[in-house]
Structure formats: structure tokens, C-alpha cells
Amino acid sequence: MLNIEWHQIGVVASKEFWDRIRNRWVLAVAAVFTAFALVIAYFGAAQQGAVGFNNIEVTIASLVSLVIYLIPLIALILGYDAIVGERERGSLDLLLSMPITRFELLFGKFCGLSGALAFSTLAGFGVVGLLLSYQIDAASLFHYAGFMFSAILMGMAFLSMAVAVSVIATDRTSASGIAIALWFFFVLVFDLLLLGALVVTGGEYGGDIFPYLLFLNPADIFRILNIFGMEEVKSLYGLSTVFPESLANPWILGTAMMIWIIAPLGFASWRFK
Image 1 (cartoon, rainbow, N blue to C red):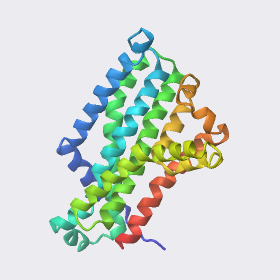
Image 2: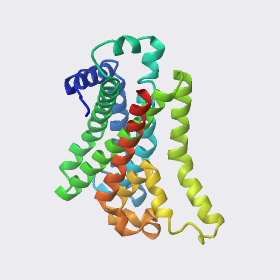
Image 3: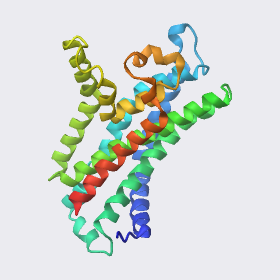
Image 4: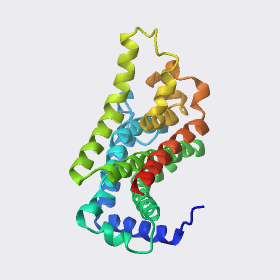
């Protein structure tokens, strides 16, 4: 039976969170999110000949494309040296000499980094949410809140992968290389491989399992979770033709995202022991 001291986890998480706040890294990320979100929200409908904060669905669709590139990269950079950095600085042995287990240290760091990532996401996109709240209805605001929450979950999934990388890497250089490789694979390469396979086979093979393969990428889960809730933009992405409505249930997608958060962290905990 696990004997977990949650107070120890809280102490580690709090230190990790405030360290990120004090070095202004989180505030810089929040400022970047705010700037991009404001520009997209105001000029997102410029192609239709209009500007201003008025179309929440177009705004969210544009922000989804932005977030898929930025948040995974930020999460991987945030977490890749969580353990290997302590090991290189020689502080890991000192930490483990204290009355704290390896799981408590690992989970505390993950919670602190997740808190910092969530704070920057909410602070950055929350400004746009406040501006939009005066011009859109409650249902649209609910969509926007769901977008921010799912962005945090996706960030935690990539942060979990980064922590796993930090545990298995021998030094910070190799950890950063693996983290960047993961970003390239999941954000830039994964979808191209799937589409390429469909095109090469003329759609005869793999079409049935194609929707399920999208669950192997947390960035795709995030995209489907947001796009399928908006009728106006669902057709623009073409997802409705390749992804069945039955799999677009938020509970199914949310469960898949939680698996992406728990599985790499569980692997990291096992290896760290």
C-alpha cells in the first residue's frame, strides 16, 4: 500500500511553481499568449471583411491552430530538465537524502510545473475571455472556457512526456534533444504520416482505424475536442468526414487525454525508482 505524504508533494510543487513565477518565465509566456490571442480574436474574421471581437467559433478555431504549436513546445521545454537538471547540478542526492520518496519528489515537480503552465494559459487567454464576455452569450463563453481547460490538459500531457524524458536521459543536452524530437513528431510529423499512408493506399487500407490512430496523439485529441463542438468550423477542418461522431464524445476524448497524462508519468515514476 502506498504511503504518500501529500504535504511533501505540496512543498515540492509550491517551490517549483514559485521558482517559475520568480524567474518571470511564466509571465513571459502569458504575455505571448495574450498578444497572439488578442490579434487573432480581433482580426480573425478579417478574411470575411470584418474585424472585432464578434465570432467566438472562428476565434477558437484560430487559437486551436496556434495552441497546438505553442503549448506542447512550452510544456516540453518546461519539464525536460526537471530531474536530469537536478542530477547535473548535484542537488538530486541532497533532495533524496531528505525525508521524501522519489515518487513524492517527481509528482511534486510535475504538479508545480503543471500549475505554472496552467497559470500562464489562464492568464494569457483569460484576458481575451474577459473582452469577449461583453459581446458573446453564455454558451459561447462555455466553449471558450472549455478551450482553455483542454489546452491545459494537452499541456499536462506533453509535460508528463517531458518529465519521463528527464528521468531516462543521461544529461540535459540529450533530454532537450529528445524533447524537441517529440515536439516535431507529435506536432509536425504524425498527421503527415497518417495522411500520407491514406493517400499512398488510395484510402483502401487504414481508413477504418484512422480515427483510432488519432488517439495516439494528444495534439489531435485536443483539436478534435474543440473543433467537433463547433458546427461552423467542423466542416472547414474536414474532420467530420474522417472522424465518426460517436468517438467525438467529450468524455471519451477527455479519458484519452487523461491516459496521456497518467501513462508517461507512471512510466517516469517506475524508472525513477
